Image 1 (cartoon, helix red, strand yellow):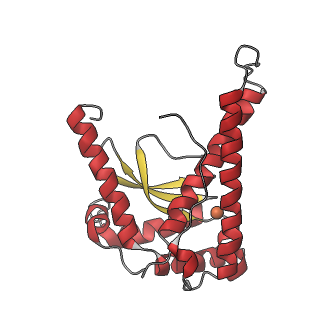
Image 2 (cartoon, rainbow, N blue to C red; image 1 turned 180 degrees about the vertical axis):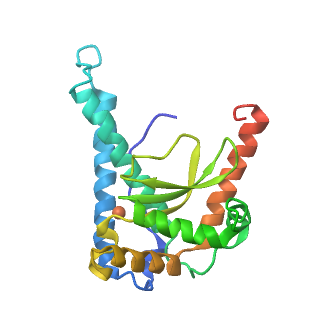
Amino acid sequence: MPWDEIVARKFPAFDKELDGISRQTMEDHYKLYEGYVKKTNECRGRLRDFDYAEIEGNQVFSDLRSVSVDYTFALLGFKNHDLYFGHLGGEGGDPNGRFAELMDTEFPGGLDVWQQAVRKATSAARGWVMVGYDLNDGSLFNYIMDTQNLWAVYNMVPVLAIDVYEHAYARDFGATPDGRKQYVDAFFRNVDWDHVNRQVAQAEAARAGATQSGAVE
Ligand SMILES: [Fe+2]
């Protein structure tokens, strides 16, 4: 199926009062998301329409190189926020369901240690923390990402996305390490674990399908 332009989606979180994350922060944040949508379409359109018979391919600098690299920044800006906004607006609390079941086996101390680990990860990341399900081995892992297009790996399906760029929390909590910690606590008070568990179910189904077809193992 050929590529088609992406569109900014609406999310239930914008119709609710979140606990600790202000409406203004969410609305400003949505404008950034819309910017990623616009630039994703612009980059992808240019990459489709380049005259490849004539365009320069140069590893130091070339339009092809620049647009290709920035496309991943724009597209993952869209994808990461899609998940982030998508799983806000829930009841928060401790993880439950399949996510909790799987994550409980990832650390020697179980889910309690994951709760500590993911919070520490949010202090160690410069842009995002993604919890991803690995289609190759079925494990869950906390990825520390310095921007939306660095350092996740292939065959990882994000199931939980925490935006730790300052724009996500500076207005409400202050642009300090402590402000970020307070914001992460607020994030977990608003996360929709049902949404997270739907992501896990989708990832497990993809893994099951791929394993059956022999594509992953
Ligand atoms: Fe963001």
